[in-house]
Amino acid sequence: MTTETKTEKWEPRIVALVCNWCTYAGADLAGISRLQYPPNVSLIRLPCSGRINPFYVVKALQHGVDGVLVSGCHPGECHYISGNLAARRKFAFLQNFLNYIGIEKDRAIFTWVSASEGEKFARVITEVTEKVRALGPATKLIKELDCV
Image (cartoon, rainbow, N blue to C red; front, side, top):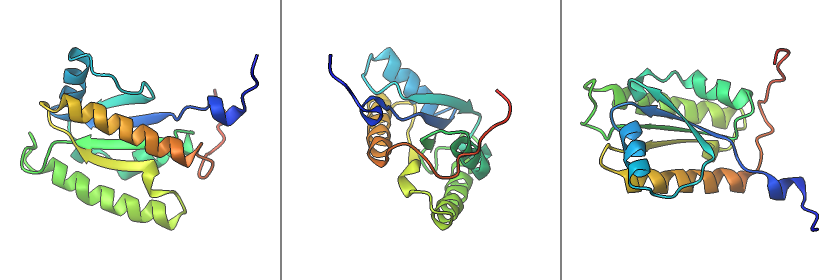
């Protein structure tokens, strides 16, 4: 029997905040197409990436998530006209804030994935998982919770 260290067994926990109309549909297409990608990501489907408050990402990191992916429709393809452009502005603010408080930039990633891009979704999930795995477990910003 081999002895493995804790870091060898460690797998990153990643939350993906995704647009219902594009990225979630792309994830569905990846599943229907039986494309392989790491199971480390938990999807949270939202009506639009523009509805994401940057502090959702901060809250996820506080609760011990190792990485957060925000993904929406490509520019010009938003079902709510300009929600994805609002998301891009919010994410730029968030990246500056996370940098200011000392959080690595690859802990929060923003992408565009359309409903027809199942292969791209699988590739994005693989890339995000690899980036977060390379960073190791999140240790900054984690808040101890009193309740279970």
